Every structure is written in C-alpha cells, then in structure tokens.
Length: 523
Image 1 (tube, rainbow, N blue to C red):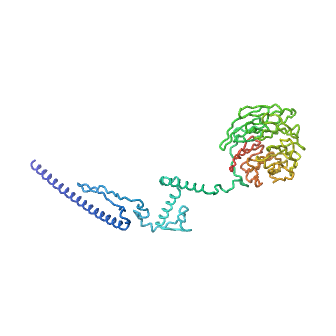
Image 2 (cartoon, one colour; image 1 turned 90 degrees about the vertical axis):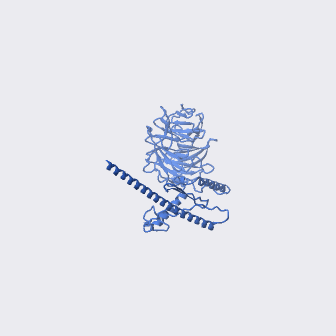
Image 3 (cartoon, rainbow, N blue to C red; image 1 turned 45 degrees about the vertical axis):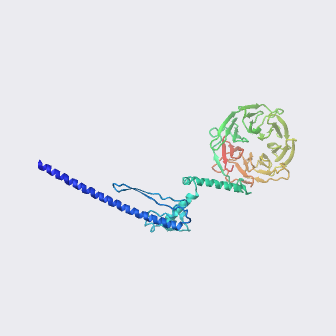
C-alpha cells in the first residue's frame, strides 16, 4: 500500500509540472502573436499617415480645407492578446466619395480574358453590340458592356421595377422639371393639339361583335323595330310577337330593363319621342300605344281623331327631338298625317302629288317623302306646303328615305337595290339641279334600311330580302367598307337597325328574333 501511494504522488507531481510548462509556452506564443499584430498595425498607421500628408500636399487649396483622417480602433484583451475589433471610420466630405470606376474589383478571374462570347448569335445579347454584326468579345469586355447596359436601363426607365432605387430627390426634381415645362409652354403660342385627323378611316372598319342584346330571350318573330335613346345607351326592340323590350346596352352584357306586352298590337314600328321620355308603338291596326318611361305607364289611343277610316298605322315616322311625329296613310296612300307628340292628336295632313307613299323623314322644319313613282318631295311644316319635287335619279320605285342628323345629307333606297346619296347644302333645300353624290349599287334587292349615324360619317343600308344584306358606307369617301359584315358575322336577314347616340354601338334586328350588337371601336 505504501508503494502504491508513493507512485501516485510522483505521477501527480509530473502532471503539475507539465501543465505549468504548457501554460508558459501558450502564454509566450500568445504574447509573440500579439506583438507581431501590433507591429503590423503600427506599420499600417504609418503608411496611412504618409498617404494623408501626400494627399493634403497635392490637394491643398487654402489653409481652411479639412483633411480626411483615417482612424483604426483596436481593442485588445490584455490577458490573451487577441484582436477583437477593427473599424474603419474614415469620413468622406461631399464631392470626395470614392467613385465606382476608381474602386478595384475584390477578385479577378484569370479565365475571363481567355473566354470568347458570341453576342451576335443570341437575340438577347445583340443589344450589347457597339458595331454592326459584331460577333465575339472577351469575357472582360462582355462584363463591362453588360454592366453599362444595366446601368443605362436603371437610369433611363424609371418604372416600377427600379422605382425603389431612386431617392425622393429624383421625384422632386422630376416635378420641378414638369412645372418648368408647363410654364414655358404657357409663355408661347405653340399648338398643343395634334394635327392628326380623327375622322373615320375608310375601306376597313374596326369593329367587334358582342353578345346579342336580347341573348337568352329573343323575340318570337322578326325584329321589326330597333332604336336607341337619343341621350344614352337605352335601346328598344319591338317585334310582331307583340312585345316591346328595353335594354341597357353595354360591352359585357346587355341588361333588360323593361318588357311590355301589347296583346292586341303586333308591333311594326316603335321609336322614342319627346327627347326620349316616351315611346310610340304602332302596327297594322287603327289604334296605337305610347309608353311613358318616367311614369312607367302604357297608354292606348283608340284611333286618330278625324281619320276614323284609317285602319293601318304600321308606318311610323318620328324625330326624337321634334314636337311632331307622323303616320303614312294606307287608306289614303297620298297622305302624311302629322301628329302632336304632346297630345297625340292629328294636327294636319300633307298630300303628295303622285304615286303612293312609301316612306318619309323629318329634318328640322321639313319633311321629305318618297313614293312609288320615284319622286322626292320636300314639305315645309310651318307653311304646310311642298317646297320642292325632284325625281330620284335612276329610280322608278323609291322604297325608303333618311336624312342625316345635321341635315346635310339625304339618302334614298329603291326597289332595284340602288341607294342615292344627296348633299342638301347649307340651305337644306333639295333643288332639281341636285344630282346624287353617289349611287351605291352594292345591294341587288329592294332596300328597306337607310340609317345615318350621329355625325354623318356612316350610312347603314340594307335589304331584308337578302341574307347578310347589310352594308356600311363611309360618307366622306363615298365608299363601302370591305370587311362588314365579314363571313364570321352573319346577321341573317336584316329587318331593322340603329346606331347608339354616339355611334359606339350598332344593333341589327333580324328574321330570327335576335338583336345583333357590334362595337364600333373608332367611337
């Protein structure tokens, strides 16, 4: 036991002595390392001081210039001699910050110079070409051009992608620039509006076919009446199924506002009167109806006072803003019965000189009529007399007539399919010397539709006796649009049509009870 204790004591003493030697060695190595670091830092400080002195000598302009100091903060633990933190607190004055070009790259790839990149092969890299058909560039040159291109995009295109990279000062300077431009513009007489013409282009019409106005609820008969409200996109649709429907027309889906059933009147004609406050409905009966949109009330007029023998009122002539409307007599085929839009009573009759009445149209204080003899008569409502009688050129049986909203043009359709377009001039009187501006021969059957748009740029002509028998005429150039209707836009047999109040929409009623709707993009 005594020998064992002595062996343990000697082993403990050897361990203590070896640990002391290791601690002394580690301490010595730490001190030597700290000494070396201190010496290297002192050399760096001396070098920085020399650089500052040389820079101050070169850039010294006056005695009050501030020198840039570089300070190295060193925290060293006295126990272990380790370096804890080094902070560069060099301060740059305004205008003396280091530029991106002066900053050297932290790392260079030796292979960049040997790499060759073909910038002509890929369309995405062709924008980096500085010369036409430039092919291969080195890796270093490719890097420079790519950096230059990205910098240009970020500077020039201040879009949402790079918006975060610009300071509020940039936005402020842009506002000041806009203000300066506005002030300079107001100080001159420079033309602000563009000289570009905004008239309707000819030959090709830009249009889109939309969903049917009465999609899901078509008429059970032909659509005999189609008309738009004079001040908004409210459209009426009437048919021989005795139904009148009102729709709010828009691009996405037209909404039915009202539906009226006239149990004893197949509707041949329907139109807005009194500025769009009322709708007149008539047919092959002696009575007619009018619907008040404001009161939501349908009223029946049993007959025309003073014309008890007139039993067919299917031909209705209206002007939305006029205080009159008219019926064309069938019992007395030479009589135009002018009615009061307010009282719905007969005011007076206008009698044509020859033939049988086919159609008539209001134009301010005048009424134009056409008859089976091919004559156009113009009546003055104020004097109730005929102002002029002119033979419709090349027509032996005129079937319909229409006057433009401005009163500058008159169009007539004939049984042979010819449509004549006349210029009424400033006087608004159709003289015998007037010849048609154009005789349009694109239809070959009897014409039943002639309709001008709101600004006299378009004229719709059609025949219900021909499938797809509708055309649009460019009035200024006197030409027919080539692409309307296209083979994809078959409108079947057109019985009625109408333009909206600003010509944004064109609706065509056909024999299947549908109201086709087209959006005219120019408007």
